[in-house]
Length: 264
Image (cartoon, rainbow, N blue to C red; front, top):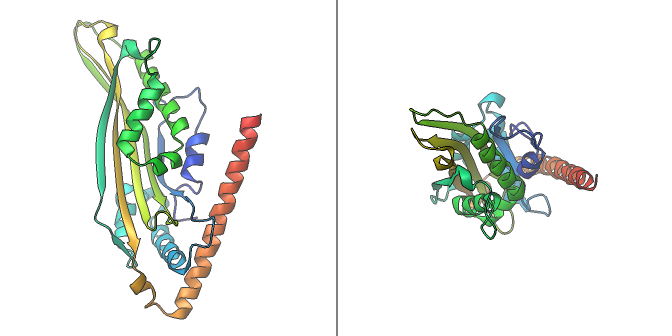
């Protein structure tokens, strides 16, 4: 699993990250590169996908462990000869804000957690990816972090202040499956911020989040794959099957652990 900085599936990483009493503002969640296995391990995905998986993981394994981040991984993916970018790259940014006094909603109003959930869905714009990111755990962690930033704000009567804190920076590689026959490299970065103004009371301060979502899709070039020698193809298929089996076993183990934790 040298292709990734974290071998666990991204949803398991998010759910298992840290103590719920510790906010992301205290300890940001940074994932250089994690897999999103989707349905890739659940069925025979075919020779083309397996050869592509082997080629991609070989390429990513060449990046030193401490240097796996968005730019280096994107560059490596772009240089894989059996893949081509589909050109429909996504780069979205959005800001979420709330008055510090509205961190706890009144009756009938959406809670902070619900509002952050809606904001995340609009930022990412992809339900399948949101499911992979364990949105329920993610929105809870973010709402805690916003509340923590509010409670720890320092005030100055004569000087406005703005404080920014990184909360998470997650890079994920999603493998092809029957519904999405392409590799997708995506990134979610979220920072928390707190703004106050001179002579303003605590209730007039504003807290919020700034988010960035990026996505690049890479499609497999079947014509080039079938130009490879039979011996090379067979070796690549075998290599991919071992990798996918390891990924599947790890995901099954993580699912079992999550089930036991929820029952305890």
